Image (cartoon, rainbow, N blue to C red):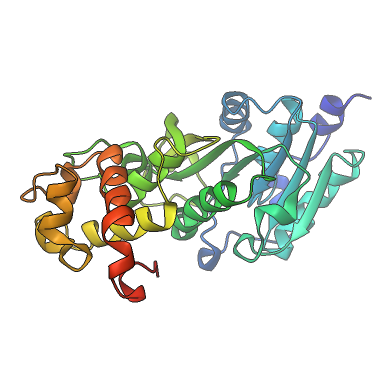
Length: 295
């Protein structure tokens, strides 16, 4: 019996949940996609065939099944909820070592601990940790050249997706937009309504693809870039000459050929890199450590 036939012979996802006497936990941000037609589409769009996958928050295993059916080489699945781990044991039993289950919180794990690489990441992320995970992954990939992540296909809140792909001069454009666009290509693959989930969330969701770049889109010291961007967006209503006052203010902006009356949302990623590079060259050595240490 091939793998598809074995997976088809398993109890349905709904039945698997019932058999394990479990329900989604609000405290863990659990909202599951139970319809295999939807998870099959996500797996197909992720281009996971013949790839090694890290899956975040598999829950009862609907996306896990779809990834396997799409022909992934292997899956390392990280699940915090032990009851959901139990839901996945029948699937693991038929997978001949293709599926490794880790009962842990993804926030406790580094990507480096989940090698060998290259790998791709898939998952339906809890909304309350999505931003933190995306930034930490991109940062770790940037600083550790041994980590090769080909792409990240994740389901997140639509509002966050809008911010990640937003352009300057829009209300969605912010710190995470600039940071993500410096280090990766981001695009939206699919939009999902609350009815696609159990239980239904109060918000719409998006499936996005993040492809980490081999090097930042523009040459820049990432630590300085983070500090400049954080200061600039610290108060969106302030003009740059005010928000960057402690980092050189008018003089820094004049040397960067940036209009000091603009606000952070008016600057491109390249503009922020230019300001960061001028800061490193002309200002960093003369300022106290606290002004350029990113917190």
